[in-house]
Length: 587
Ligand SMILES: [Zn+2]
Image 1 (cartoon, rainbow, N blue to C red):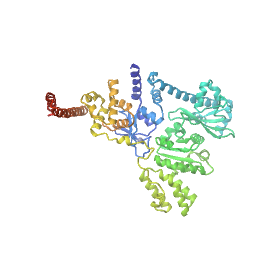
Image 2: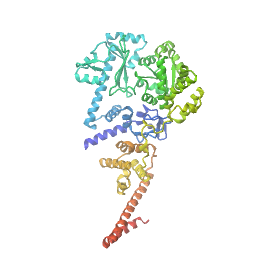
Image 3: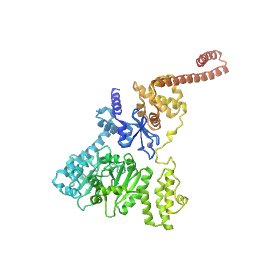
Image 4: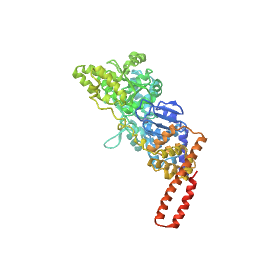
C-alpha cells in the first residue's frame, strides 16, 4: 500500500508540476480564450479551433472529436509514448526523481527496452559525428560538405556524421552481442545470414533524424562515391515511423513557428543547404511521399506549407498527390516551381536567400498550380476536359468541408467551361460528417438522462461530496452504464485516498467517460464555495426525497400484497412505516 501511495504521489507530483499549456503549446499553437487556451486539434482535421486546454484543471478537451485527458495522456497520444515513457519524459524535463516502484515490472522492462534503443542511436550519432569532425578517414566527407558550402556551425547544429567505408565500424564500437542486438533493432546494424552483424551505413555522410522530443531516432545517409543507393534511410523501427517524422522539424521548429510557414523540401541535403543560407523554416519528408500524418504534424507549427520541389515531372506528381492531403487537413499550401535546372540547393547558391524568398512570396496556390498543369498536359478539348475532370477527382473527394468543396467545384468548372452539375456528376457525394477514420463521436452522444448527468457533472467537479451523495442514495439513481462507470471510478478513488480531485478522476477514466469529464473540466465555470455548497445541498435534498419516494412506492406495493393475503399485522406495520415517510415528505 505504501509503495502504491508513493508511486501515485510521484505521478501526481509530475502532473502538478508539468505546465500543460507549455507542453501542449510545443506542438499546438495555443491562444488564450477566457480561462482556457484554444488551438486547432492535433487529433482531427479542423479549421476552426475546438481544442481547449485548461491550465487550472490541468486538462485538455477537443469539442470536435472528443479527445481529452491530462498532460500524460496528451504526451502518450501525441508523441506515441507508452505511459512509463511519458512519465519519464516529464520527470526528466521537470527534474523529478522517478522511483523504480512507480512502474510495474512489465512497464519497467518495456521502458528499459526503449531506453536501450534510444541510447544506442544516440551513441551511434555521437560516434559518427566525432568521426566526421576528427578522423582522417572522414576527409572526403569534410571536403564534400565544404564543396557544398556547409559551414561548421550547421554541421554541429544538425549533428551531421560520417559512416566510414568499413563493414564493422559500428559493430566493433558497440562491443558485446547484447548491444549489437539492440543496434540491429534500431536499424543501425544488419544481421548476416551466417551470424554476426554488419554496419548498415557505410561511406556516407549521415543526417541524424530527431524525434519531436529531441532525441536521435534514425539516420539518413548520402553516399560519398558512385555507390548505390545514393540516399539511404534507416528502416522503420520501434522509434522511427517514416510516415510521421519530418527531417529538420525538431531543429527548425522555432523558426517555423515564428514565421507560421514551413517550406517543404524533398531531400535532407536541400534542408541543410537552406539552413546554411539562413533559411531555417524548413522540413523534409524522409524519402517517402508526404503523408497525411506529416501534414497534420505540421499544422501544429505553421499556418501554411510551401512546397519547394524540383522543377521536374516527379515534382509535379508529388504535388498532385499532396493536394488532397492539405485539403483534407485544411492546411494552406502553396508551391514554388523552381527553374527546371535547379533544386533548392543550387537555386539558393546561385540566387541567395533573397532570391528564394522572392520566389516563395510569389508561390502559387497548390490546387491552382495542379489545375494549370493539368490544362497544360491535356488541353481544353472535350477529351482533355474529361481527363482533367477525372484527374481532379481525388482532389475534390478529399475536401471534407461542404462549403469549401462547393467553392472548388464552382471555381474549376468555371475555368473548364463546364457546368457545376456536369462536374459534380463525376464525383462522389461529399463524405458524411461521421466519415470512417475520423475519431468516433457516437459515445459522446450516449443519452445520459438529464438528472443523472447533472448529478455526475457536479460530483466530477466536486468529488468531496461523494460520501454525502452516497448516503443520500445516489447509487440507486445512477443506472446508465456510462454513469455507473464514473461513479465506480469515484468510489475506487475515494476508497484509496482521503481527497479526490477532478484531475485524478479524469486520469482514472477512459473512452466516453473520460471525454465526459474532460469536456466538463474545460467548460464548467469555477463556482464560489457558497454556490457550490448551495448546489450540493439542493442535490442532496433531491436525492433524499427521491429515496423516500422510492421507499414510499415500495411500501405501497407491499401493503397491497399484505392486504390481498389478509396479513393484518404485517399490513399495520407497513402502514406505520409508510406514514413516517409520508410525514417526512410533507413540506
Ligand atoms: Zn479533435
